[in-house]
Image (cartoon, rainbow, N blue to C red; front, side):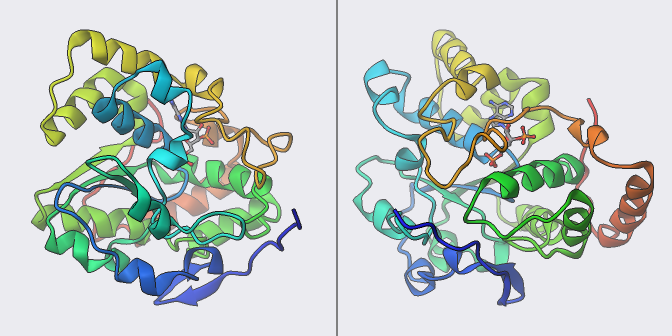
Length: 292
Ligand code: A3P
């Protein structure tokens, strides 16, 4: 397979993007949602894979037969994905046999296809504190050959503050979706930090939002399967067969912690960050925890 070049960022409807998520835009925007579709939305590196897996197990059970035979990305297609050598997300979704369909997207709120709103689909949003989010994104861009060159940590840090990332500004993403939650009742806004703190509790919140009632035994089984160590060892979730990911540079299931930013941010960067954060988020009431 020929290596594809790392893509350039460009402005797309006011959001920085690469062609790997915009090439199929006409079909994405025209996507026909169904009323029972469940949309999982995140800014990249906020725990998407984790929550996709939890939802898949909640809906479709933990049977070994299914769980060992289908990659998570096949069970939960990525709506706007349009990368070389991968099927388009919209095509995967049209073929998906499950009901409901679980749909992954990183789109900012203003770019979600309108059919999802018209059909009043349930939306699960997951937000993660920006410091850990930035660190996780940096390592991801190092190991993913279809992301822009990350450069060194300091330049990546400044790009993150400026919102020059694939899928745009973290600040706009988390606050845009938070704002939407105030008027759209079919939206559950979860936090990565809460999931780390008490996965069982958040599983319960998810189940009740979705109108599901898993037995105590099912819950226990799901909790075991979605534990960081289990997912790290599971080829269906750990990215080990994905040819664009170089796990020798950094694992896809990297650390799974709250507070790893302390191993990356210098004191000066933290000061710059805090000041910038207050400015960017002054109009939003969403709050994140950077430590547990
Ligand atoms: P780190 O890079 O900080 O380890 P996404 O799925 O949106 O790409 O998010 C990836 C981040 O979620 C990574 O963070 C990854 O380790 C973390 N993650 C994935 N599964 C997890 C789990 N079961 N428990 C805790 N963190 C998890």
